[in-house]
Image 1 (cartoon, rainbow, N blue to C red):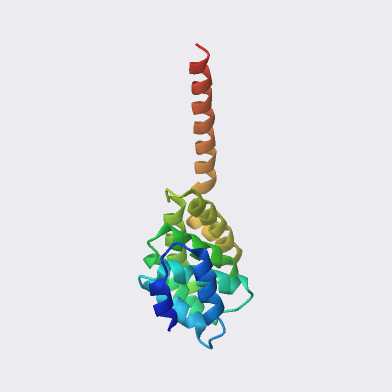
Image 2: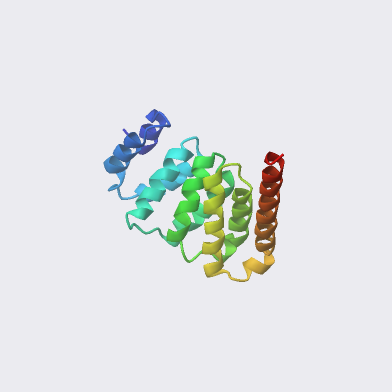
Length: 168
């Protein structure tokens, strides 16, 4: 059975099955390349988890494979895939200059996700991006600090209104 076949057979839910797939295939010579190729296919959710696990187990990627991961960011449609790819970012330094714009676009997209953990890891992704490209904070994410302040002020205001309303 191939890696692609194993991911096709995965029910999309059971982590134990993904762990079993990882144990079965991670020693293959081109495992990372196979997984990364699947990031643009229907198996992207499982493939992104396998990539994250592989990186967490201290395997490195060639600069060509890192480039391919960055190319796939715009195709990550499922929130679980986005989350897994965000969790891969700390392992992909140095980021390729020519993929900076793609990463900025991906991060901006994740910061507006309706899924809390994608947003949280999106902020961490901005931090990771700033390690390699500090200028991007002023160029692309200058509003983050102001947005955070505005959001917390709105939350305080809403909280006050709720407390005030409950006291009547």
